[in-house]
Amino acid sequence: MTRPHDSLAPVYDLVYQEDFGDFYNWLTDTTLAVVSELVAVGARIVDFGAATGRMALPLAQAGYRITAVEPSGPMIDRLRAAAGSADIECVQALMQDYDGQGRHDLALCVFTVVIYLLDEHALLAAMRSAYASLKPGGQLLLDIPARELFHNRRVRKRRLQRTVNLRSLGGDLFDYSEKVTLGDVLGGGSYADRFTIRCWSREQVLKAAAEAGLQFERDLSDRLEESGSAYLLLRRPLGP
Image (cartoon, rainbow, N blue to C red):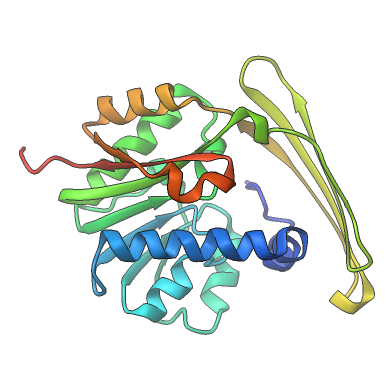
């Protein structure tokens, strides 16, 4: 079964770096800084939707114990092959299927991971998985992209041509299609991807999180307001 970004995996990082440039670096670095404030070096972190290691690799290098959970085989294969990945536990699985056995201090669900959860059942299952993955008192950091981010995008540069089209499927579902052509200086080649995504509201996500047993702790959106997403911190209670 194919997963989102399977076909784009060989150039995924390159495309996003070329497209978003300084903003891409700022968002990564700021999110890493937030993580460093939440848990001390040596803490155990599960990174849901880890992709090719945007968060997992620098966190492992900094001394955190990382489990990277990613449903796309080609994406997680790229992570496994990356320099610095030897100490990362890589698991190919959907967020909602992962069994973390209550061993993590922090769970990450950032960089639009929730949009790949297409119905209420999947959202609730994902929140339950996060809860079950955390130690009592452990925290979940997640982002919820605003509806304004669900729009077409067209990039025309010498090094990169990229077209992203979003077509409403009714309600909160969208058909996402992407075509990428790299310039010769980046190795050339054309790539295409297509899958379905969903726009979730803050209220919907928090309702599912509460039903799963997670408690809202605080809103960190002001730290990452340029991203256009709400960044929320939740916690598994200390009690049973």
